[in-house]
Structures are given as C-alpha cells and as structure tokens.
Image: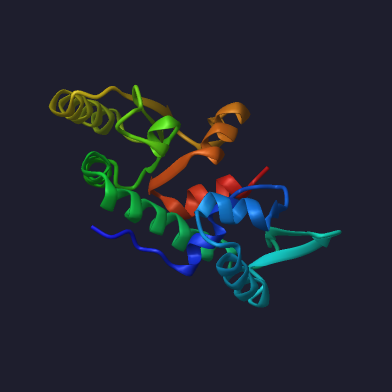
Length: 194
C-alpha cells in the first residue's frame, strides 16, 4: 500500500524540538528535495505555524509555540505518522488495534526502537497513562499476556496514573521516538511542557 505523503510531513523533524532546525537537515530527514521542503515551510511560515530565522547563509526553522492552533496541527501530524506506519507494517497495525480496543480512555504512547523498526526491535515499549480500576488493570494485563503469546513479542509497559509521574530522562526518550496511539491531545500538551 502506498504511503500517504502530505504537506504536514514537512513539520515532523521539528516536533517537540526546542532548537531551530536547518533546512538541509529537515530535507535529509524527510528524504525530500530542499526546494520542495522550502515551499511547504513557506506555507507554514505564512500561517504562523513555524518561525523562520536566517543566520548567515543558514535558513533555520522552529515550530511557533505561541500559535494558539499549534496543538491542533500537531494532532494532525501525529495521527498521520501513526496511520502511515500502520499502513507499512501489519504487526504495528495489530498493536494499535489492540490498544484501541483495550485501553480506550487512557493515554498510550509507543516509544523507543520499535517506533523506527518494529521488526528489528527486541521489544516494544509502551507508556500507559491513566488511572484504571483494579478490575480494569487485571483485565488489561490478561489481554496483554494473550497478545504477547499470539505474536511472540515482548511488550514492556510503563504504567503511570498521571504524566507528572514520568521522569525527565524517559520523557526525553519519548520525545525522540514515539507514536501516539490513544489520547493524542493530552499527550501533545504534556510533550510541549518543559
């Protein structure tokens, strides 16, 4: 199945970065020609989604955190990333379907090496945020064991009742490599907080 490529993809390399990113780095990460990326970024600059800074001969870009619609734009980007990766990988599609079915109402984030290549990863790391009742948690872990047995994969779940329980090193790791499966809006808000 063909990968869906939209203008939103041009913003991915800047997600949750506090620093400005060079145009050439953005183009390289996206595997797109820099003139195409520049055109897309120009559109986003006009809309106030990104900030452009010229430093000598360098053209640098950063998401505009002052834009009141930034969280809405980020939801589109994050959902598009999830859909694209699910289209490319049946196992990921199964994992996402599993969490949609058993963890609805919680925040679910896949992070770590499995985000880049689920086939080569030793395990799948999941951040599960929510305050489930004891019966819900027992049912969840029972379903998780059945899922692990069916697919023969190791799934590591980090469960927190609230995002405030996630330590800074783990948050930095999640910012680098992640897929939001459930609760994107709340997770984006947490990711934008320093």
